[in-house]
Image (cartoon, rainbow, N blue to C red; front, side, top):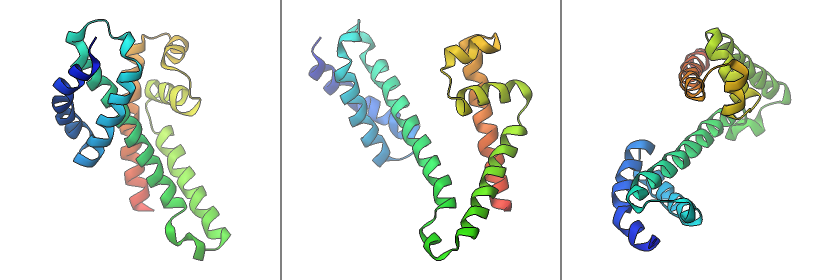
Length: 165
């Protein structure tokens, strides 16, 4: 496999996909670079050169997902540990942390049971999808679907609760 030829041929198309997935050009550039590096490291696992573009796009979407997750966590942390917190008392910071924790717990508790179970196993207990699906006696794809919907519901609930606080 001629990795350089394949990367040169498909990187522009994958970059355009990453702009749509990531939502901006800067993140898409970072994602593409990281995806190309990851693909290079794993190039031996690609069996068919015709699949390179799709394979690279999948890697890119995963990288973008990690970046978005990291950014959302940083946003939550910044709410608790914002730039001006040095001027706040320790008590005020603890109150803020408790309120944030309460919002998160309320968001999880508000999920329908099947979504909550999937969310708690994967996000709280950090079980791999295969193990969580086994515990819930459902297929891995069903688990991933429930988890995706649960994440959306948790985000929406957090947005509502945090804005109201």
